[in-house]
Image 1: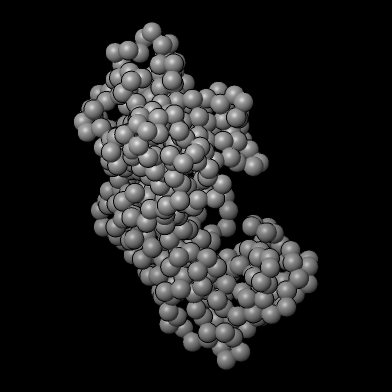
Image 2: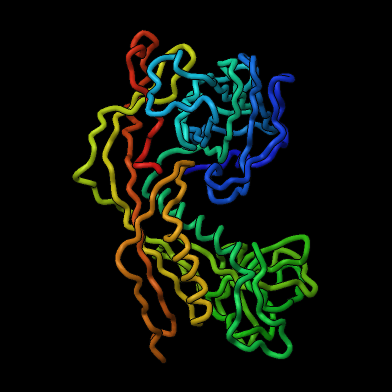
Amino acid sequence: MNKVIDELDNLTDWTPSGALVEVDTLNELKPYIAGHVASKSLVINFLPLSFGEFAEKFFSPSIDLTLFDELTFSLWSRKKKKQGETFKKTADFVYKIQIGISSSAEEYLVPTHETFDSVTFDVRALTSMDRIRITALHDDGDFLIISHMVASTDEIERDVLFAFRDLFNIKMNNRYPKFLSNAPAPSTAVESKGVVNRGILLGTISGVVDNLSININAPLYLQKNAVVLIDNGVDTETHQIIKDDNRRFTFNSYFDGTKLKFAHTNSNLYLVIPGEVGIHEKDVLLPSATFWGLTGDPVEEQEKESKIRDSMRVNGSVRETPAGQEYNYAILMDCTARHDDILTFTSKVLRDILADEFIFIHGKKYQITFEGSPSYDEPIDEFNQIGHIQWQGSVVIREPDDDNSEILPTGDTTTLTVTVKTQGEQL
């Protein structure tokens, strides 16, 4: 389970402590942007003689952390990165961060590795957060790039699948404008075309609140099991079609339910191609992409790491966690549709995910490995009119034994090797 706290992609609400800190620039280079949503990341410029100076951001309302164990974000230091070094004692760190409520924040030391990478902090002692403050512990002048702050609790089997689903939905929402229909639209309907963050425009509908059905002379794409989004310019609602009675469509109880939530007059109706985690007990979504693979296979040959240490506090205490087992999760990606142009359009998004070769889970970056060859199940007339294209990829993730982690006191940390790698082989 995870929650994006802040993509760290804008300057809003960031305040420097004084003239020796500048928070007025955003980075647009992709190698220094984490996650799959943001197109920018935040740059904090610490000028020479800025020891003790800081940049901070307040959150209103405060962020509830009661369900989360860790806070992760990615960063890179231009001048203070350490090549091939580990962080063994407090003097090795050149930044610290305060997380939590202003009056009782936890204060951690921040490692600055050679490459743009994620850092993770133990927040189990915190119930909420209304501020983050990053403070320089040097006078040399430097700038930090920070990106994609995520709070998380490890539920690996679930989280891997949901990460693929969420990535598919992000990519599909951006790809809709590239849709080109091969099916002629009825003369009374709008020509099918894609709209970013909406879907494939099928036409317009009108109706009053609590209507149990809609009527539209729509293209062939609007059939039983389709998911539609209705937009009146102010409000949107999403429904799944359960029945087509001579172009009068009724909804099931999924999404926004069996009735219209809002009044509509010539509101745009869009076909949505959602990503979904495999669930056996619900109606199939058509078209859609479904992700399967709840169990991981143990990796037999792996580098043995007895302990993982992170979250060093300013007093020198550090969290130590048994490294746990690595698992290889094979993810089956199944796109389904009644129409070949929709099917190939959906399949292209899955190919793009595999081509990227990485995915962010809990704010950390993991490698995706393409497995095998794609398969195509052709629809059979009068029996199964649904085509399938299936792809498969895999992700290796190390699962730390968080239940047995402990905080080592200050006196025990002077000779420790501290690493922020908490799961799998990060890029």
